[in-house]
Image: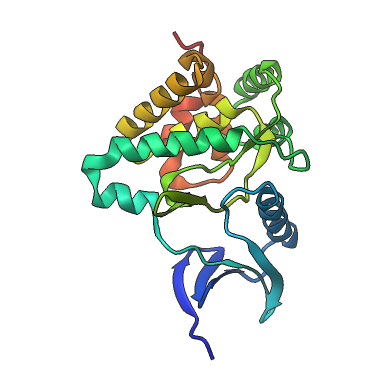
Length: 248
């Protein structure tokens, strides 16, 4: 029999490699709807033709839900950036190009970003009612777009394979505004390296001819939505960004 190797784990899941497969096994009691939604999101993006790592099976193993995907050989972009810091700008440049490529696609069957964010902000108990109102008002006034958005686009979710790059973990994928997706990436990069975050936003705005202020207007909204994940290490920074203000 093939050997199953544990390669990553968290409180809610364990990820194994078995030959050319990755098996993501969820904790007992993990919501079935979330497992099926992740598989469905990935399958829908896979059908577009992007390099995502194909879904092979959704099953129940020892009473626990599991998603089996194809194994993608290679290191993550995060690993490359750590091992070759002198090439950081080149890696950020490639990452921006990949993000732009993703955003050029549409995937009409995915959930709509604005609807998802509205639910998240309405349910967030870390903010007062005045802040909630301001965030929802700003969100409602933002332009409606229907571009493919990853929702968690960061170096650890990009696998480099020669000249190709594969994007994994599409559980948060939606259709919406590309600048909101970039604002989320900016926040995620800021948690680890603010310099890279600023470089990323500058390059995206330059390559897409987007006003930096427009992307920045999404930051309080995206920060509030990210807070619903309740990650202690992120809370302090995100609460700072939630403060609604007009950027100069």
